[in-house]
Image (cartoon, rainbow, N blue to C red; front, top):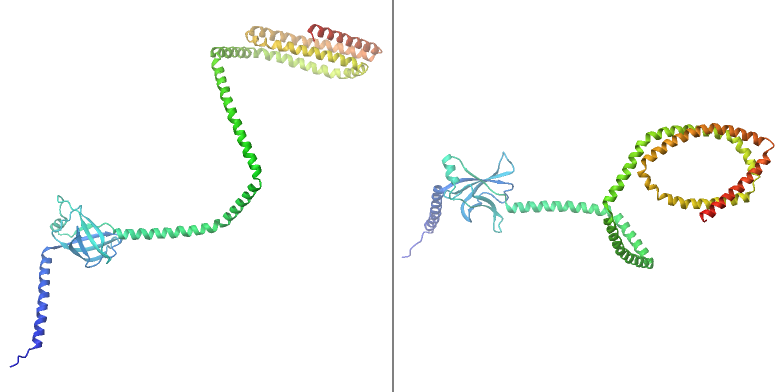
Length: 396
């Protein structure tokens, strides 16, 4: 007797067994999750790229939960919020750090938790007591920051290249002109290479000479320094004191000089009047001088020149005595007084000279002019004899 198998019943039994196995696994997992999980809100500044529902939450590399939702903070759009469900026993404290990382080559982002101080209060327990959701701030994604930085670098590089391209176009003409000028200059140098060699040789010779001169200057400066050190400072102070005394005496006598200057001004006025009156007389004297022998005049002037040279030598000797005048301030005062008297006498003499000139005009206008010319010749001869005598006595 053959047994007939009911394939429908066998199939139904097989499906029921499979479904029962799946139900058992789901039941066991659901019971564990419901008894040991809690909510944790993670605030993510910046981009949360790659993070979505089902992403893992890891603590020191161990999975402790999953991401349930990712959304934008309405109050602060620059921040993303990830609501996660994690194991209630996860030791999360204030010192715990949250980072956004990538899992392998899939590009799936995960929330990685690390670090905790056992002495600190656990955020999950504190939030449960207060009836709130525990919250932690994550660090921005390193990969996202790297990509953003790379994007910024590429943007800046593109901007720099654009500016460099424009700059190259702007300076192309001037650079070409500069290169042409350099070429022209190098050609000129090549044509004048001999002259440049001579110039460099001369410069080298000059440098050698300057080196020798510098050595001599060193010795000269040392000698000058020794000379300055040898000067007696007390003598210099004494000389300065004497000069100060002389200037003081001159300042005191300046008041007396004012009177002398006034008298001199008066005398100058008289002399001006005298000069005006003598203009006509000088015209007549010119006629008289026309009759004088020029040879005799030249001889007399030569003798006078020799006498003046002797006088110059005597003046050099007198210059050595002038420094003694600083100690003769009283004599200078007396001299100024005498000058006043002399100016007064000059004023008186100018009046007398006017009378003499009148008589000279009368004499020149008369027939006695020939006698005057003879007397003038005799006078010039006398001047010559006097000059010769002075030259012989002075040893000229």
